[in-house]
Amino acid sequence: MNIGEAAAASGISAKMIRHYEAIGLLRAGRGANGYRVYGARDVAVLRFIRHARDLGFPLEDVRRLLALWQDRARASAEVKRLALAHVAALESKAESLRSMAASLGHLALHCHGDARPDCPILDDLARKE
Amino acid sequence: MNIGEAAAASGISAKMIRHYEAIGLLRAGRGANGYRVYGARDVAVLRFIRHARDLGFPLEDVRRLLALWQDRARASAEVKRLALAHVAALESKAESLRSMAASLGHLALHCHGDARPDCPILDDLARKE
DNA sequence: GTTGACCTTCCCATATTGGGAAGGCCGAGG
DNA sequence: CCTCGGCCTTCCCAATATGGGAAGGTCAAC
Image (tube, each protein chain N blue to C red):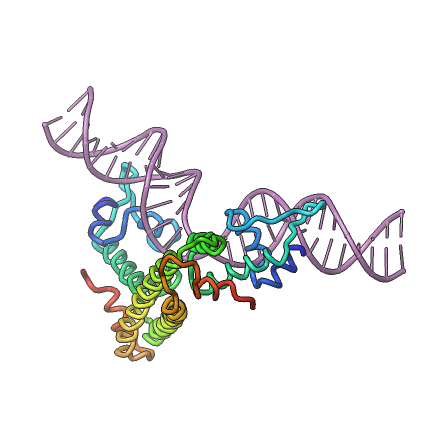
């Protein structure tokens, strides 16, 4: 299977597959013509990566998860530790965004939003502090 | 006032002040020695930028907000439009992160997290699909 | 007049994904 | 046999925002 087919099978673009290889997340065999060659196992790895990315894991975490996945003697405690740390990071970031949205939403509530120039949003951004 | 003092007064690093100037968000005067020179008005602009960044506005939005702020004939409708669009973007991203956290948290609930290798988290990442 | 704190510009790095150019390889159809 | 479309290769550049650090100029104080 060439890279295009592996991309279609895994849901990761060919561009990113090459990138993941460049940063050492994968290895790919090469055919006589220099083309990368993939098998079912490689596609499984790519899908694993995609699922981890879909959960927001940064690539460094993905690297560790892949290593754990491929280590039959792993302790699930290590996986759980990584996962819970990531959950905490996600929640923290979500809360930060939610808080920004709430602040700005509150300011917008008091903005007429018409042709007049008065605007509590700009007033707040211009506050001294 | 030199850049260091402007940085301290505005809460934006000197590094970023130079960057903002490089991308045309600000202009700064120069002294005879080539040093950038800032006044109270410049610091007010810098603070405006910082407040907008604190609300998560991307720099392109900050550029528009600055232009609106400095336009006495602005319509507050335009500011409100920008703000509400940003609120929607923030909420959408927050929801996306929250959803990831929930999915992963749910998986982690079912993971023993001990010395055994079985792990529903890895099983899920490795699912075919 | 030297020292230390400040300033300058320029390059590099982070993390992730994509666009696009220049060129090689392959299979199909004329 | 030749050509064309579609795939592959590598390499460079783009975006987000921020910071590190080098090499060198300036200034104020001692």
